[in-house]
Length: 475
Ligand SMILES: Cc1cc2nc3c(=O)[nH]c(=O)nc-3n(C[C@H](O)[C@H](O)[C@H](O)COP(=O)(O)OP(=O)(O)OC[C@H]3O[C@@H](n4cnc5c(N)ncnc54)[C@H](O)[C@@H]3O)c2cc1C
Image (tube, rainbow, N blue to C red; front, side, top):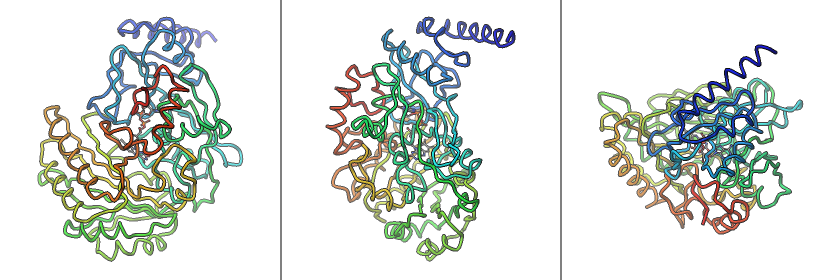
């Protein structure tokens, strides 16, 4: 008892010291926070983000430890008229995030529990959990849950914009697995949202960052035998002159529910910095089934076959190199209905040229093709994700570099690549999955046909524009 009081006193003195160096007066908030919460100045590591390009520069970070901490922090910010931004994994790259020294980050990172019910049919994911937390919990509980393909990304940060994952063919979007959401609203109330809450339920699953802070969700999960925790996956590396054939094959490949594939360009690294062409394949089943399903890619003749059976804890390994935080990363995305070989050749050339710039060897081009079978059985209007029946491929390029002097070159490169994708996208309108968008897009590009309904709901649920950092719907 004595030691816990002592640590509380110590904690409060650390908090007071940290707050003293911040430009925002949070002294009224401190007594309301739980003992394990903390407040630090804006440059604290807890707030370090995936990209430093155009990133927020808050005056302070509130590191919450309970769902109640989120509520009291939001209520305090509303009362004191302080701008705030919730942070889950810190990987949001949109240039719309513009928090200044008079604003605070509500860092959800310590809210990272992932707990299953006894039957393993439902899982509660707290608002700060990362994809890696969900992956570890799946393994420990022998259950499958829809989640993203990069361990470092926020589990809810990615899910709440729709959520793409490699089990999409079987489970739909990550947000399609949500059963209920605990949220703190723009009016500073804590509520639980289920399908009975018609409008908010629809809006939160696809556009949540505009309406509330989601402190936890309950999602469907699927108990499995040991074999159900493994998949056949890995890279197939192709000679550059096979690019057109490969693009054509990916365009024509019918993806069964168990399948997903990403076509990737990365640099071979210094001194040559040659762009490598990789197809990263995934089959939720046996090696034999996987090889058969991806026969059209094998027919082209990969130079290297790195595929193997992997446990769920290794499925995301190939993406760990993109998880590094810091440095500058400008990321441009586009949705595609089809893959056009000539366009991809042009993009290859742009990429090859960009990675010759000093310090840009970690850049990449990625296009994800996930099975659309389950996704398209779920009605279009069931959530605010707008591209269920239009986008077949989600593409993005990360221009990654360290020197701010390259900012303009990186913007021009990313913008050119996006123009190339758009020029042959096969879509009637430019459309980009919101979590892949750069930040300069017209709102129609990320919200599609849902824009007017979302704007009306924004007026109803967030009339004072408390949530404006994420492709703002505020008038
Ligand atoms: C390396 C990498 C891999 C990726 N892989 C995938 C993938 O496999 N599938 C996929 O769909 N996307 C993927 N993305 C895109 C990703 O979904 C978006 O970048 C997403 O915004 C990141 O969420 P975050 O929590 O990490 O970022 P943050 O910057 O913390 O959050 C992004 C935005 O969401 C808001 N937000 C975060 N948490 C909450 C919450 N609990 N309640 C309300 N609002 C919240 C924040 O306020 C912010 O506006 C990837 C991105 C990167 C950089």
